[in-house]
Length: 328
Image (cartoon, rainbow, N blue to C red; front, top):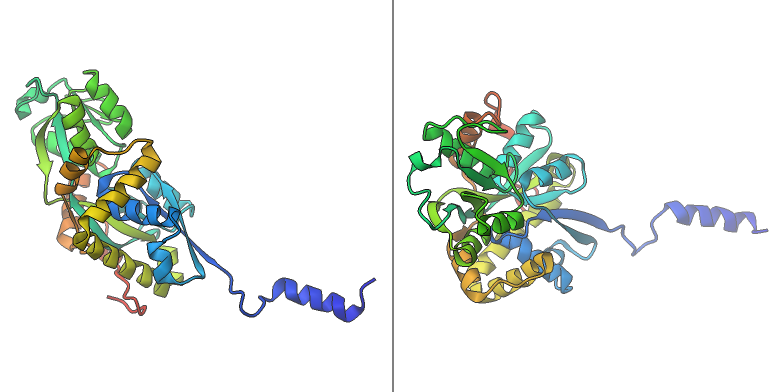
C-alpha cells in the first residue's frame, strides 16, 4: 500500500499540468480539393510533410488537423456541429449558416480567392444562348453551395422558373468527380463549377466555357463564432498566417502550384497535368481582402432563389481579428 503522501501526490499530478508540458490546442480546419481552395491545399500538404505553415506561426502547442469536403454546405454542417473550428468555404454556405443561426454560429475572418468559377456547356453547340436552356440539365457541386446559387439566380434572370426538384431547367447538385463523368458521357448539358473542374471539363470532355465569374468572390476563410470569442488571439494569428501564405503564393507561384498539385493528388489519387494546372490557376486571384459589397451581392442572389428568407443583419458576419487580438 502506498504511503498517504504518495497517494495524494499522484492524485494531484493527475489533475495539475506538469510544468513545461502545456496542454496542446487542436485546430480542426476544413477545405475542399479544389484550386479555389489553394491556401488550404498548400497548407494541408505542408502539414503532411511535417513543414506546417500554420503550425510554425502559431507555436508548438498548436496542432492543425485538416478535413476535406466536397462543397460548402457539408463544411458548414460540420462547423455548426462543432466538428471543425475553421474552414475555407464559398460565401453562400457561410451566409446561409449565419442566417439560419441568427448570426450565432459563423464569422468570416478573411477573403481567400476570386474567380475560378464558370458555366461549362457541351461543345456541340446545343447551349449557345439563354433561350437554349429550356428543358436542359445543369449540374452544380451541391444544393445551396455558391455555384448552385449562382446557377439558379442566373437562370431565373433569363426568365426560367427554377425549383429545387425541377422547373424549366433541371439544376442537379452533383459531386464534382461525378459531374465530369456524366458530362463526358453526354448526360449533362452543362456544369456550373469551380477550378480545376472547369478546366478538366474543357480539356478532357471538350466542354466550352459559356459564362465565367471572373470577379466574383469564390472562397472565404471562416471561423466558428465560439472559437473567435474564446480564442481571438489565436484566430488573429491564424488569419495573419493565412494572409502571409497568400502573399507567399503570389511571390512563389511555381512552388505554390507544386504543393497544391501534390495535395490534389493526395485527395483525388491523380496529379493534374501542367496544362490543366496552369489554366486553372490563371483564372484565379488570391487575396485575403473581403468587401461588404461582395457579400451584399451574394445575399441578393441567395434571396432571389429562395435560399435566404428575409434580409439577415450582416453586422456581425465579418470580423477580421488582428494578430494582437484587437477588433478590426
